[in-house]
Length: 230
Image (tube, rainbow, N blue to C red; front, side, top):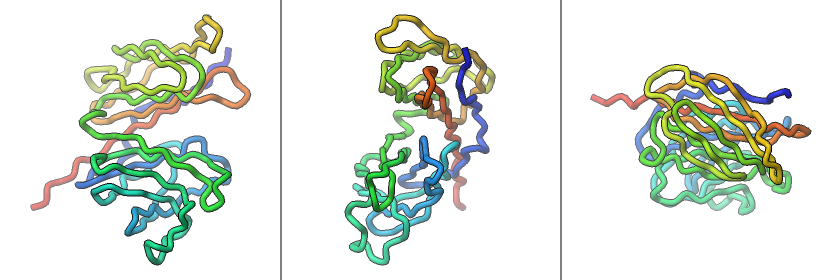
């Protein structure tokens, strides 16, 4: 059987960002089509900033104002806040959410900007350094061993897995999946990944067009600590 997997290596330089005070976010365009935009304007209700929409790593860290927000992705920055087209893709950010991932996906039905947005809470108190945030976006159940931790995910679910190792080292990963209505366990991956105690990790199990075996996409989220100002 041919296994389809994107190897996960916690290489900080692939997704390095600088931690800043206030609210922050990082962006990922998962499953972007070939003609997907690489950059858009992120509008927070008052100001706009150009942001990257990477497909194979997390974006730089972007700073946003505190408080309850409605953010939008636009092709161009509005001259005035009231000039924003209401049907532009948007997402609500509650006041208590101080750090989040903005997951972008394709939405051809939106004629303003052909994307839709999903907000994932990344509060450091809930999702700590060394931990792994898993999303199973398939109809299959997925499970197995991830270092010292066990992974057990139902279809279309998410879970946080504690640090798979106690220090910076390689660890074994052995995962299988089960197709709905079939009790047979099929191998998904058997490999080694590298643990970075300074980094959080976001992982997705996704379906592959024309294939039965899912694919794993992993993204390290390492951030430089903000240096104290003298």
